[in-house]
Image 1 (cartoon, rainbow, N blue to C red):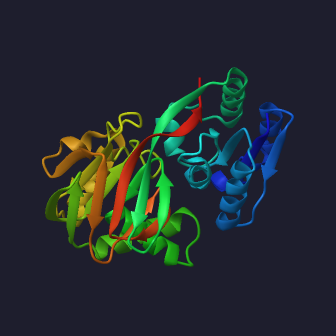
Image 2: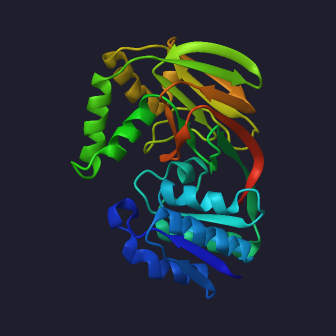
Length: 294
C-alpha cells in the first residue's frame, strides 16, 4: 500500500504533533508524509499524491486538514482515512470514527488491510466567482459565517479569545439579511440571521446545527432561523449543542438535493474554511467519498 499522510502539526494547538511518528508506524511501511507550510501547499501536495496514484490519502488534523484532503479525493475513488487531531473534529465524530488519534490510526490500518471502505456523501459548492469546493460537514451563511469572517480579519487577540471577541462584535452588529433560496428549484425569499446547510450534523466543535443530517441519504439539510434579537440568538446556542433547536418554532428545516443561496454581503464558510461570497449553488454528491471504515 502506498499511503500519503497529510499531517497538520499545529492542529489541536499542536498537542498531537508528537504522535506523528506513532501514527506513521501504525499505518504501515509505505507512508509518505506530506509536509507543507501553508494550506495552499498542502492542498497541492495532496492533489498531486492522488493524481500520482496513491492507494489512500490519510488526513491527520482537525476539520481544516480534513477539508483540504477532501479537495484531493472527492469523486476520485481514492480511499480516504481520518486521524482526528484537531479541536472539534466534527466530520470525524459524525461519521462515527474513533476520536483518539492512535485508535483512529489503528482503525484506518485495519480498514486498509481489509480493503474496507464506506460510501459517504459530500457536498459540492460552486460560487458565481468561479469557486468550486467540496465540504463534508456544514456550510454556514449567516451569523456564524460573519463571526468567522471577522475573526479572520483580526490580529489581536490570539487563539480562542479572538473568536470570542468576534462573537461579541457580531452580536453588536447583528441584523437580519435578505436571502433568496432555491431548494431543488423551488424559490423562497426571507429575512434571517442564521442559515446553514449540512451534509453532516455539526460544526464549531459539536454544535448540532443540522441535527438529523445523514451523510448517506443523498440530501442536504438546511436550517433557517427567522430574524432574532441578540438574546434570542444566544439562547439557541445551548439548544444547538443538543440539536433541540430544530424544534423551536422560530427555526425551519428543509431537505434538498440542490440548494441555491443568495444574499448581499454574505461570505460562505464550510468545514470552518472560507469558501466564497454568495451566491452559491450547493449540490449533494452521493458516494463522492470512499471512507476507510469497517
